[in-house]
Each structure stands twice: as C-alpha cells, then as structure tokens.
Length: 112
Length: 114
Image (cartoon, rainbow over all chains, first blue to last red; front, side):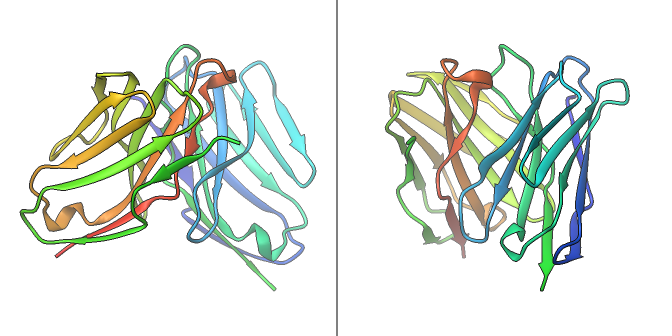
C-alpha cells in the first residue's frame, strides 16, 4: 500500500547549524507534499509544502526539495534556533483525494 | 482562522468503558479526520468523513467507530476501551475549496485507559 518513510526519527543539532529531514514515498501518483511542525503540547501546523511540478521551494530559513525520479523529498532548516525544536511530519497525497499519508515524524532538538 | 476544537485535552477512562471523543470545526469544511499519534508511529488515520453521514475506514479502524450527524461535528467512539487504545487522538478538517485539501488540526486529546 501507500507508504511514506521518514528519517531520522530524532535529530540533535547545535544552534546555528543546519538540519535536514528526509522522506521517501511509494505512490508514484503522489503530487503534493506538505510538511507539518508540532511543537510540544501543540497541534501540528503546516509550515511549507511542495508540488510535484516544482523541484525546490524556500521560505526564509526553511526549504523543501523534491526528487520525483527517486521519489524522495527533504526539509532543510538553516541557521537553526531553539524555537525550531519540535516534531516534524512529512506527508504525501494525490490531487483529488482527501487522504494524507504521513511519515512517522522526526523529533528535532536544537541545542543552545 | 480555521478553528478545530476537541472536547477534552486529557481523559482518563477504565477498561471496558464506552468513550466519546468530540471534534468541532467552524469553517464549514467537508472533510474530517481522526488520527492517533504514538511515538515512533507518526499519525495513523483511524476514520475519515467527506460528508455528513458518510465515513470511510482509515488504516487502523479496529476497535473504533465514528459518527457525523452534522457537518461541523465528527465523533470518535471507543465501544469498549482497552489499554492499547491509550494514545493521543488528533482530529483534523479540510475542504476541497482550499488548495490541496490542506488539513487543519485540533489540539488533541490525550486518552489514558486504565
């Protein structure tokens, strides 16, 4: 069945360093890939997304890249700050469907 | 702003009890979802609904049922709670009127079954 794998499960970086989280998907029909951030005790919220007709998208310190051939996409956070500490979820979906297939999450810790 | 609310932040129940988790959204969204969140397992879809009185099973429906009598409200029911249903439960809603059916989440209900 459809599957999204996410790595690593935990990631610790020093403040100011970069962080990269990777996801792979199995359904070649997937064409939209959102990333959600869940801070401790809070709800997941959409932080960035990418469509399959785009290879990269940036929003200030965060960026997402997509490799359709290899069926993987990645979240890049530069100049990490303590407030970036959270659990990050990737997901994949196909236009016309309601369901998102979520990855298993990455707990990012930014060490001051 | 989309607002998705859940009836309780924390809930403690006993094994065998019938448990109701309520979710309400105020943005006239057609789609509503129930997920459970467990460490290392991510967000797993239990049930979803794309219209009033319509429902579809997700990936882990066993031991759960749902009810959607009104568009804004989606209830998750544990007919006979068991300890392995101790988890964080998240509700979400979306609409095809927004690009890519962006999902908006509620704050979650942490359920403990003793």
